[in-house]
Amino acid sequence: MAGDSPVETLQVRIHGAASLPTLIYLPGIHGDWTLVGDFRKQLVGHVRFVEFIYPRTLTWSLDDYAAAIETALAKNHITHGWLLGESFGSQIVWALVKRNQFTAQGIILAGGFVNYPISWGVRLTYTTFGRIPLGALNGLLKVYGKLARLRYRHSPETVANIQEFIERRTELDRQAALHRLTLILGHDPREIARTTPLSVFYVSGWVDPIVPWPLVRRWLRQQCPSLRADKIIFPADHNVLGTAPVQAARQVLAWMKLP
Image 1 (tube, rainbow, N blue to C red):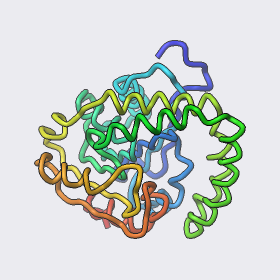
Image 2 (cartoon, helix red, strand yellow):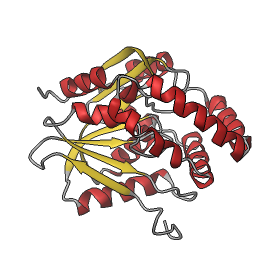
Image 3 (tube, one colour):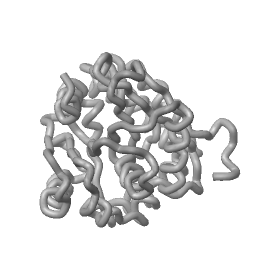
């Protein structure tokens, strides 16, 4: 972890009283909390919600991510809680489970996965995303910003964070995202998922071309004995927590057996 600038350190925010059950959100490949605002809002008064911004590191392993998160949780006197892994964040969840240093009470995968089911898709994304000129990428982000305001029109908290999401997409941020893609390719936590005693739950948006839920769900149902339930939300997409915040929050609270 040495060599990261002071700006590029793991950031943590905690919402809610310490007396509430703890839900720890590990974001996807974008690495921050900018797309989860309305989901967070739905949980107010029900859970203590812990969220992170990953550093834009080009060197960390998944074990490094897990260790840094454990340290941040310990500094904030958080000793146990549910793990909510969104997409890439699911890989950190499995790393945390393997390390067994933090007391996890359950696992929820949101558009997440175990071993990514189509490895060539990750390689194609890496090649395509890495070759787009920065100027063109900035142009695409402007278009995305306009579309996102329509896409998240029912999620005012998320709409308010769209500009922050765009501003965080720097060249270093892109390189960090590419590095996270290599971590996905090099990670195979299937044995961890097969043997974990923790209850596992899976939620996905119905329209998800990034992580194909039929393949993920089939593997979990056949190979993960601890899978307790799964839910596919229509018409949400890959960012199921952002595009279906009300439905996703209700489902997560139900799985945590909270009102």
